[in-house]
Image (cartoon, rainbow, N blue to C red; front, side, top):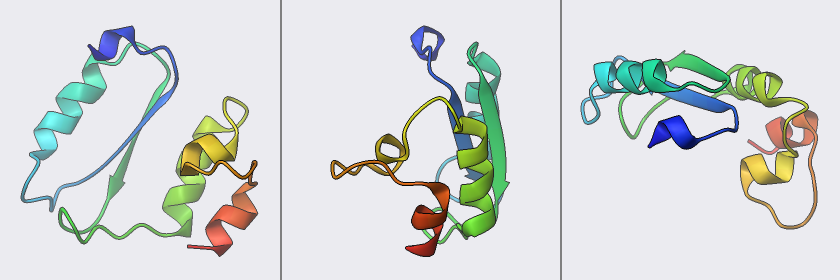
Length: 88
């Protein structure tokens, strides 16, 4: 069904994930026909290390396509990258 998605897609996955096989995310990535980005992260399934640089890389890829409130699920307005990363 991913072939029907038209918005840009960012996939984050770790080789250390013991729950979801890394190869599954690579297969999913290969099946995406829209604009896409794969970001390798470190850590386990529930202990992945998400830091400012990782968020910046994802937000930079999506920049200009959507507002930050959609990215972080806020209904109170839009946020710029600086505000988002400061609150992490």
